[in-house]
Length: 314
Ligand SMILES: [Mn+2]
Image (cartoon, rainbow, N blue to C red):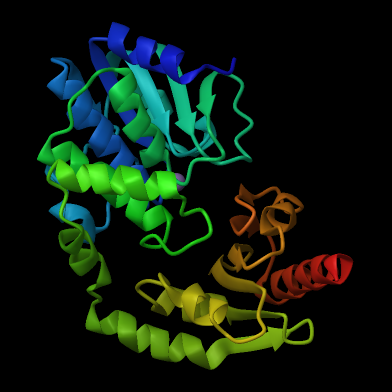
């Protein structure tokens, strides 16, 4: 059932012991909105914990509460399980670990087709923006801690207020969070640091750029051997995205012999439709999918799907 913001706040206010979670492979919005809501709920005198079934990148250790993030282990009970920034199918082992009386899903991904109690706001730039709005709905006061976490979700999902999902409303929320103590430079300085190895990996990845669809698309395609060797592929797609004339950028990584992960970005084309044709999802301009096939075939299929889509739109 779709809930209103007020109903969502009501469920949170009625719970005393809340477990918060988000998707595996957590990003700044998943982490920031979970921790932000944790701080808000604790400020209201509730017990709140964040459980994530994945490693949390160390760069986010600047966020208050980072060290309190737990892995799902054993069994635990809660009044309410809150799933943030994803549909309930991407929370890994948390679903099994938490015995909750109720569960709600709060997300801004328009591909979320969840059927349970859901607050879905696809016009919001980040789940953190929804958490920001929930704060006033719950009459919860921002602290320096919650403000920094929520700010981080806003900043990362909007590419530091540069992507097309950046609205005046997001900027006003960010400004208000600064008034409450969030310091943007703490977030950007922590997140722009890169390990030396990552720069070396980037140098190698850039050797694998290919343009296709008459230069309207380009991608980095990494076979299994290359993917294995790399510590991280974060940020690779941004090098492709900025190539002149490129509408659709793609990064394909062969994670296993017969499993390739694909992420796409676009300036105009609906890449979530391309992702959906491979059972993936995401947003109009940022989406991803997994192809259960070898590198060569996956590369051919994704290039064809992107070229077809561009063809259809021109
Ligand atoms: Mn998000």
